[in-house]
Length: 319
Image (cartoon, rainbow, N blue to C red):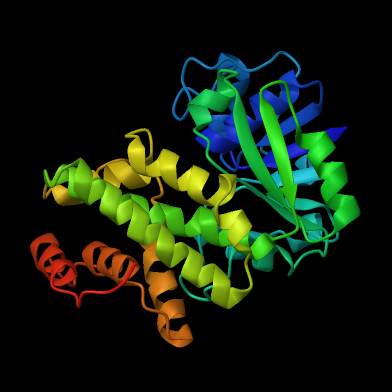
């Protein structure tokens, strides 16, 4: 089984390590030749995933045409870069089996990862769920959701992408899986801001719970299954991301709550997804006060103090 992972950030690198250890022939692609040469020399990704050595058989390359000669291609580039990446490399990706390994919605079009992949092929899926790259790369047990709307393809990919430490659950609910993976990052920013501002664990619990209600509200309108939102790709991922400083979205929120600038050179998907989700919610007529508040916070439209006061002053309602 030949698998390629396109994108050599922390998550892409971790998946490549785990899948290689699972007995697959794996190629990890990075766009920067200098960085890829360092991978070959050091046999690890020192910048994004230090102290996680590459398996001997893991191939690394900056040659995209070579990397796309595979049975399954996992695309682990940031969601905000995915549409352009697909457009620029259509000749290599056309009609391939493509699996999105990113979360969120494109800020310009509002599309999720799988909908964007459909521009290149009808053989699409998304791999999502509660997972930190460092855990996966170190061989720690992780459970993920593979959402694919084609039964036979989904079964094949579930078998192919299962490794020694990754257990995969399959669903055909692509909408629900995408919503869970994208919106949980928005809620995590809000939880991080609450903790950073010293508002306490009770505030975090309230934001998680009411944020989860908004995630389920989105799913009910867009055709996602509530069962999916209550599973790994929804509640599971929400719990992990909102409770740990390993989450960059949570760390970003903490910095906002403390009044600091976020200086890490990594993509914070929830920042963009908050804005895209709010736009989508307004079009759908959905009431999403937590998502709206996070969008207002990350864009600087309102301060945390103003948003907190507004949330607490909302009309009383039945849960």
